[in-house]
Image (cartoon, rainbow, N blue to C red):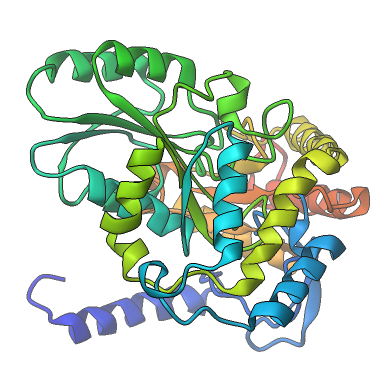
Length: 407
């Protein structure tokens, strides 16, 4: 788009969208008439509303609909109103914010945490506040876009996803060249859907005097004996220097958090710009307190989630689909071609299944995939509908070693 101004860029993008939409391949921003549920009613353009099995929500344990979580939000709204109307430093810090900070810190066996209005800003604001032009961020290539945005004020190097030899080489080669070095990883990587080799990351980073920051947005509530995520899998609660995450997935609401040393947390409270200059979370976020409790009070949700994960994975693998290296509640079906990917997504909608097509720039074009998020609240009937749809789509498009359906 060289030579165009922003309105020219917008016009070119509009042409692109119209081209894809004319084939039924622009499967984004679908209008849902229901909430975050395992089955939703969608109003597709030009069609009457109908029901779809939904695999697009990261509400892994179903807490957005849990009666106790909803009751807690309603109670807090009754007490505090619907908004906080101020930033945390100048009036917007309320008792429920403090309680959430204390509870999420204790959840990770630490003493201090700071809240952000989104998980995205928890990452971007924290890294921008901590790493400057004298420093170096060393990122796994699979980390979330929010971490990359956080590195705009500092130097960066990347290592191939989960490649410990490459990480070690970067750490060795940069010894003594920067004021601060920080290795940045995800716990569960949202596109590959696999987990970080956290024990090796921590060992290598600390051996070379570097810090470790980990965002485990997709691991908390899903992995670990008690649902504490990847950090619990490796029993590294005291070893990860900065833990970040979101309340918008397992905890069923909105917001982000950073858990770290109390002095570092206090520094972020007054130096992270998206925290200090942004309004605080609404009173409804007090429901997070109940969501955190439910991880321990009702562990059967995690058990049900994993039963659903195993059932769907086994069914898809049995049909010959490539699921990559998924180790989480995210199940990708690899198609490897953007146009094929879009057509698979369109056909799934036709079959009553709502899933996400993921392509460039979220992943390289050759790694295009259909991404599905499994929830504990999916029933066996829901999952069977999904498997039947994939059986039809796979045969029709020849993406799972089946004979094509003749039409």
